[in-house]
Image (cartoon, rainbow, N blue to C red; front, side, top):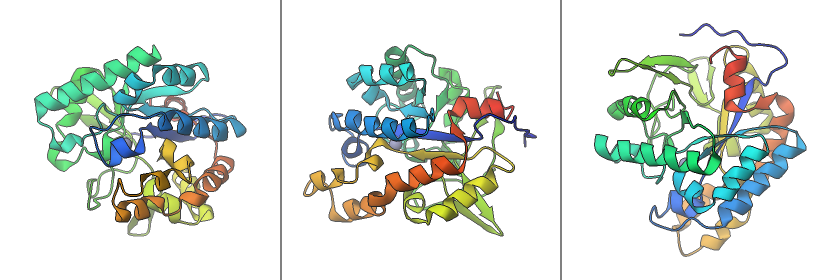
Length: 284
Ligand SMILES: [Zn+2]
């Protein structure tokens, strides 16, 4: 485990956004990327601007291809651009050649749009687990040096039970290392409670979330994640009939109050870009 010491007057917690278009990323990987993602990213920017917070946008390659001007706008506004894969197909279903192609395209498309180097990665649906840890080796071969893809709890869909909660270096079979930075999970007694994003983030009381993230910040950088479409309370209604009622129901839970709880969090801790936060904690 890396010994962490944080510099004062720097953001302590990372605010990250996985930039994708809901229907393509959650229902049909072959669907086109729509303008919805542009409108929703602008909603995210409006909230961040209220608090003068800069964030890190992990951008899906297909979004960067479809809307390069949006990515350039984020760079101009001072936000960090990194990679959220290319296709949003789960990495855990890819063989080594397919994964290499996915990661190379992910990096190249986002770098082309942003005009900046892309060195950090967040896998679609946290799809690096115990059975495909070798994916980290492929990421390093392609040029990534920081990864935030391994969920440190085993859930029905993803994660590794007992995975370290804080940033740490993973030695790779190829000889290099990957700085692995898990999203925020709060340890309370024997329990590990996910507080970084997703359903718990949308449904738990905002004050409890803020308390958990402040507690994490005593020893390591809390990393939260969200999606542009979560900032749009009415979008899911447009998909009635095109996606299953169960999926629309579960994804809609807590969405009405999502922006309100993000505002609460942004007043609770000093948030910033992923790279700034890692530097503030002496990790890069
Ligand atoms: Zn995603």
